[in-house]
Image 1 (cartoon, rainbow, N blue to C red):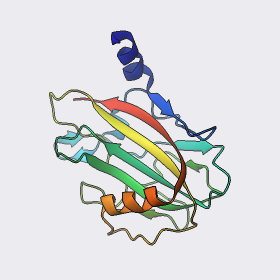
Image 2 (image 1 turned 90 degrees about the vertical axis):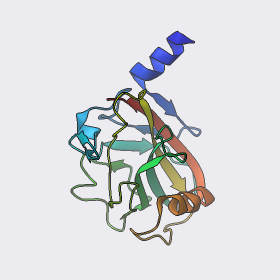
Image 3 (image 1 turned 60 degrees about the horizontal axis):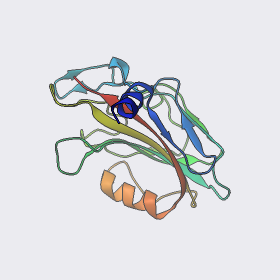
Length: 175
């Protein structure tokens, strides 16, 4: 068991639906200062990572991407990034896309930091390393009726209602 946990911490975990796969040249088993939030006591760079996906399920009409920390000490986790209405022909978000340029028509929902866009990792100092679940969802609709002011849990509900496949990377970060 200890060996398996060590492998997860060091190499990250990839969860796939069929052949639908999410990868990243930036995210490994451990996040870095580049993906750490700048604020809330953290002094990272807050740069959204590169994400790439392939082999989406047949019938995919759009994508959504989320980053969620189930270990946040809130009782309900922490939404770091919720992106919807990514066109079906897009299979990559470049490093820093949230800060620079998202694909046309994409909507970034206000995260739990209260900002639109990517909000990096910022676990409490001394807490165990938190899991950060990066997920791409293949959706059966071209667009969700969501605005940047939509609450992340509402967006999550709508995403899950239209998901036909998903793939995730789990990474860790502690301070």
